[in-house]
Every structure is written in C-alpha cells, then in structure tokens.
Image (cartoon, rainbow, N blue to C red; front, side):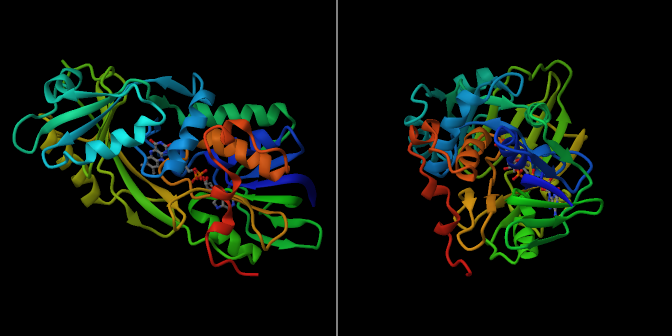
Length: 373
Ligand SMILES: Cc1cc2nc3c(=O)[nH]c(=O)nc-3n(C[C@H](O)[C@H](O)[C@H](O)COP(=O)(O)OP(=O)(O)OC[C@H]3O[C@@H](n4cnc5c(N)ncnc54)[C@H](O)[C@@H]3O)c2cc1C
C-alpha cells in the first residue's frame, strides 16, 4: 500500500493540470488507465480557444485562462465566425458573447471574409458575413500535457500509466484505490476520469452526477498543392454547420460539430459523421475532398447543465469532482486547475477567478440535484 496526499484518477488535461498544481502542496500520483496521458478526449480535440461558447461561465473561465496559456502550449491565431445564408440572427448571439471579454472583434463582409479564406462560397447557401477575432489561440494539447507532467515530476510526484483504478473504498480516514500493480491510500481522490467519472463514483459508492459523453468527429484532408492554408483562421459557422482549422501548410482539419450520446469508450468515428463532415465543408466551400488523411472521434463529457463541476462531493469525505469539461476542457483548464487547487487545499478563492465573476458555488457539485446521502 502506498500513501499519497492526492490520488488523481485520469491523465487527461483536467487531471494533469490540477495534479501539477496540487503537487506544490503534497505528494500526488495520477493514475491513468491507458499507456500515456491524453489518449482520450484531451488528445482528440481540435485544440482551439475562443469565446463562441454558449455559457457565460465557460466564457468567464476562458477569459481567466487565456493569460495563463503561454507558448509553446498556445499560439495566437485568428478565429473567423461565418454566417451562411439563413444564419443572420446567430451573429448577434456570438457578438454578444464576445462583447464582455473581447470587444475588439469586428464584423467582416462576405468578400472580406473570403480574402482570408478564399475557398468560402458566395451566393446561394454561401457566406453572408463574418466576425473576426484576431486574438484566438491555437492550443497544443501535447505540449500542455507535457508541461504539466514536467511540473509534476519536478515536484517529486508522478503519473502511473496502465494503472486503471478498479476498486475504491474508504477506510474511515483514507480512500483506498486498487490498480493492477499497486494499491494507494489517499486522503483525497480527484475524480478527473472524463467520460468515466460516474463509473469512478460508482466504484466509490458515491452518487453519480449524470455525466453525458457525446461523441464528436474530426477528419483531416489535404488541399490542392497551390494553396497554403497555414495563415487561414480557425473558421466556424455561427449556427449548425462545421469548423475548419489549418494543420500546417497543406492540410485542413474539419468537424461537423456532431453530438451523439455514447457510453464511455474508445470512441471511433461513424461513417455517416465522416461523410457529414466532408459534405458540409464541400457545400460551403469550393473544396473537393477526394481522400481523407485521417479521421477520429472523441467524447466530450457534459454535466446535465453543460457546465463544469469542481469541488468535494457534499456526501463523501475526500471525494473531489473535476468533471464535465465538455467541448471547452483545454481552453478552460488553467482556470479549472486554479479552482481545483484552491478547493482541494481549502485556500482562498483565486483572484484570477473572482476577477471574472466565477464563484466556487458555480462549479460546485451541489448545484446538480439530487445528491444521495
Ligand atoms: C473532437 C473534439 C474537439 C474538441 N475541441 C476542443 C477545443 O477546440 N477546445 C477545447 O478547449 N476543448 C475541446 N474539446 C474538449 C476537450 O478535449 C475536453 O473537454 C477535455 O479533453 C476533457 O479532458 P478530461 O481530462 O476531462 O478527459 P479525458 O482527456 O478523456 O481524460 C480522462 C482520462 O481518465 C482516464 N480514466 C478513465 N477511467 C479510468 C480509471 N478507472 N482509472 C484510471 N484512469 C481512468 C481515461 O483513460 C482518460 O485518459 C474537444 C473534444 C473533442 C472530442
């Protein structure tokens, strides 16, 4: 039996970013079922930070995170929100979401938008205008995870891979967690298992939060050799549609913004979603996708109110939730890690969070009823 102060379950961005902070206050082991960090949602994301998020809380967490997202984990890259014919009304929603945090965004005409992304189609069903955020951030999930792993190791803590937590019990003072090779005794368990958080709660006899893993699909494909797409903005429709994002000089990533309920699993792309991604891009642009370079799917996990959950369970001593990172887990991870640190060690609420109006109650598990005693 190995004693640690904090046992973090899950080496995705949530678990790794919180663990790196907690390692300043005590010994931490991150148990990860896979053979490396970031195998699930965190390694399958489009990895872009912007403010076109529905929930004000997510925008506030993003605003708190952006100053903490530094190179090489984050690089300035523009984002373009395009309205296709019929999506006029959605502009106001996106602009209103931006106004508070980044008033510098500007509206572009269809022609100005096509100067930036020349393949956008004009005319029937095509682009009618756009909103440009020239302060977006292209994130590098691998660099983010590696940065946290290095901080963790430098502080004397560690990540245990191929260490699926298979049993959890409380012995009156500690949580006892079993993995195949090692058992741990920890005062605090941080449940950062992404799509699996309710399974972890089940092992511990703790009431679930009702997490909903939703599958999302990505394709990548090469563009004609005479196009250099690297300066193109991350380009997203303001309503239902798709987004595209450059992957170097000659390749684009595309996503149809699909959401399909899935059990927690190693998500795989369904052919119809792959076809939908290609079709939506071809409809709105002059591109023809003849061959895919790659395709994948990942699970975005949402709490019932689609807001993140961070804090101790009210009915289970030492059981800490870090869950529901949805489609914003990378871009909000610096702020969420600060929140997790403050709540787990009972420190003062960070100014970075109070400054943007985020309170601990907004993130608390208690807001999701019912809880079981
Ligand atoms: C296609 C797609 C596009 C996205 N685009 C963006 C974007 O542009 N910007 C953004 O900010 N976010 C984006 N996201 C969302 C982001 O990827 C997630 O919010 C984030 O990665 C969630 O991190 P996590 O650590 O909670 O989960 P995960 O990365 O899934 O990590 C959970 C970990 O827990 C481990 N685990 C589970 N059970 C156990 C167990 N019993 N024992 C040990 N370990 C266990 C798993 O193996 C996994 O590694 C996107 C997601 C997808 C799928």
